[in-house]
Image (cartoon, rainbow, N blue to C red; front, side, top):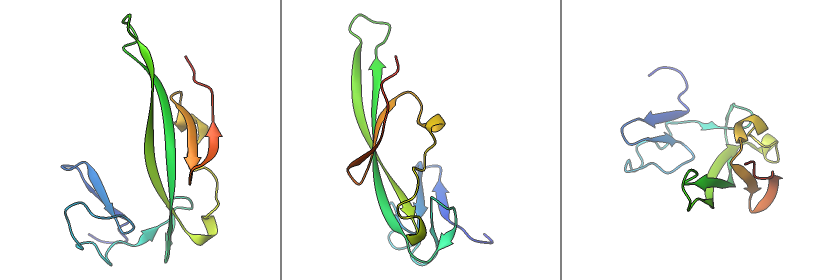
Length: 118
């Protein structure tokens, strides 16, 4: 490998390794190897802060059956950012959020909401 490597993707285990995340069954193999990368400004930085997001989805299951119902689920996502971007913009554009996301929380604080679209 040549150049700066920000993350290593493992397609067999369907995961990726980054300097700011724990490695899956790899011990300290990547310690000091991968540089810190800011997800907001897309640059290599010396220090990062992890910002947790919780996304709440609501979707219809078994839509064509008589026993269809709306289900809510939560997904936790962690973004890494530098000191300059720590209170930056929401990293997801409304086009990418789509129809199923109804709420997004940053550090347990509600930052985005939309009505469920049928």
